[in-house]
Amino acid sequence: MVLDLFRLDGRAALVTGAARGIGREAAAALAEAGADVALLDREAVEDAAGLVEAAGRRAVQVRCDFSMLDASGAASLVADAAERLGRLDVVVCAAGIIRRGPAEEISEADWRDVVQVDLTAAFLLSQAAGRRWIGAGLGGRIIHIASMLSFQGGWRAAPYTAAKSGLAGLVRALACEWAPHGIHVNAVAPGYFATALTERLRADPDRSAEVLARIPAGRWGEPRDLRGAIVFLASDAAAYVHGAILPVDGGWLAR
Image 1 (cartoon, rainbow, N blue to C red):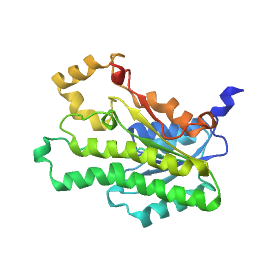
Image 2 (image 1 turned 45 degrees about the horizontal axis):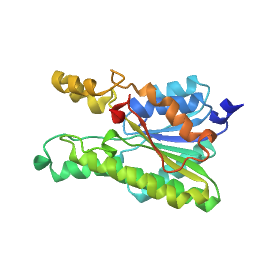
Image 3 (image 1 turned 90 degrees about the vertical axis):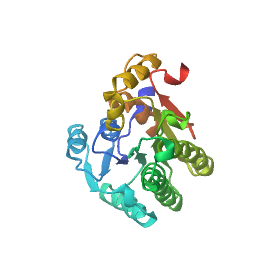
Image 4 (image 1 turned 180 degrees about the horizontal axis):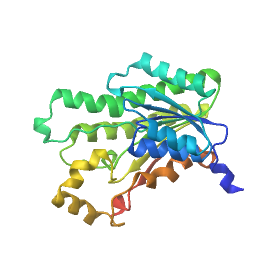
C-alpha cells in the first residue's frame, strides 16, 4: 500500500528546536508516523515529550544551547541520541532565531548569533550525522527548515536572509555529496507562519496586513501545516528526493 511508504515504524529521529513551534510539531508528526524522538532545545521540552509519548513512542529530552554548539558538541549530541534511542535515522534541524533591523544598524554580535544558530549549528549536526552514517554504511534523512528568505531578500532581516540562503546552498551541496551513500538531505521552506519568530511582525497591523494580502491562501501558516511535508521527507515515500527545498507557503512564491 502506498500509505505504508510514509510510516516510520522502528525508526528514530532527532529534532532540534523541539520546545515549541515548528520543532514541536515536527517531533509530534514523526512520532505519529511511528518514530521514537530525541528532543533537543535550550528550553524545556515537556510539551513535545508529551505529544511523542501520547503517540505511543519514546521521547528522549536533551538540553542544548545551539548558540554555543561546536563540532565536538554536535558529535556528542548525535552519538547520545543514537545510543539512548538504539539507532538514529532522521535529523530535523528546526532550531532558529532572528534579529531584525536596518542592515546598516545590525551589530556584529547579532550577525554572529543568527548565523551560528541558523546555519553553523545546522551544518555541524548534519556533518556529525553524515559521518556516523557513512562510517557505518547506513543511510539516513536530514531535513532542514529553510525559509521564504532562502529565495528572497526580505526586509530588515539581513542576518536571517544570509543564513537561510546559505542553508539552501548547504542542502544542495550535502545532497550532491551524500546521495551516493543513501543519505537524503532536503529542506522544508515555511512561508509566513504564526510562530515566535514572526510575533513582532504579526503584532504590527500594517505589516501583518501587507503579508496577508500577498498570501493566496489568505492566512498565516500554522506549525501543524508542516507535519505532512516533514513526514514525507523523512519517509520512504521520498526515496528518490535529494536536494529539494519544498515550499509550504500558502502560495506565497506563486504570487
